[in-house]
Length: 307
Image 1 (tube, rainbow, N blue to C red):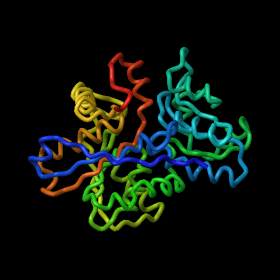
Image 2 (image 1 turned 135 degrees about the vertical axis):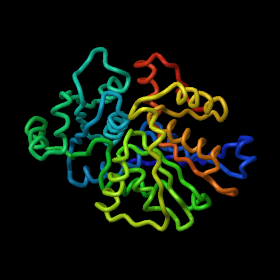
Image 3 (image 1 turned 180 degrees about the horizontal axis):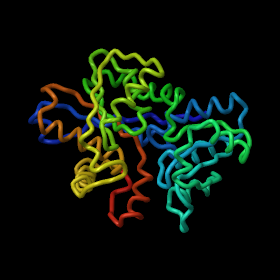
Image 4 (image 1 turned 90 degrees about the vertical axis):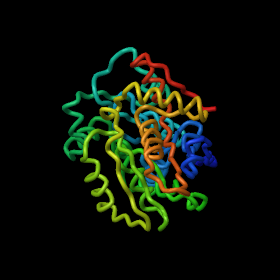
């Protein structure tokens, strides 16, 4: 069974926060486990327990070449003595990037498919073909979001977090956001910062909440204007913010998820979105291994180790 480390809450001090009469903290899910970082730990925990209950020896999942999910699943499978299969979007290109090298070294079998075929990843006939090729396996969807993943992310917030009026989270596939939403107290509002370009994420979140019949005592709001040109894209403004945040607070962010969430939160603070005496908790969802691949791909230097 995967066991978490205690997750610290780190308060941030800055003159702007004093000026606005606001308290700001960050919940360091990036420190929840030495190998399985951030929200991925919570998404995978109950899925791996279920795989073992079903006496499965293999798990199969999907992801891109720089996927945090692929990285975390390879770590989790090794920890639980399960064979892992990663279906990777795109062609195999040598040398492999740091994410895929790490997954392969941990024993994950990487199977590359073209982008057209990859779009069929949820189709029953496609899954049946994978079972013919790889044998029986426990399936975890791309990004890890399913009912058991949401059950895991519902445990991210604890009693110590009820002091906060606002919870801020990045949004990818929506599993973490949905779990957080269903665990809010009546005095809390969840703010989601989509890392993807487009308004469709609002419908996807609504569909997830409906599909899994999630109820909440709190409320939520989604921001779609902090995507910085789209998923895994960036601007110099975002890079400068990530560097500044590390220099100011000693906390590493990534340009795909947490950097955009933190930028959005800080921007809303400056624009007086939050009333005086608000207490804001940002969820650091981990994924810092992706910074290595980002630097390989772009040549842009980012901090990759938190103080």
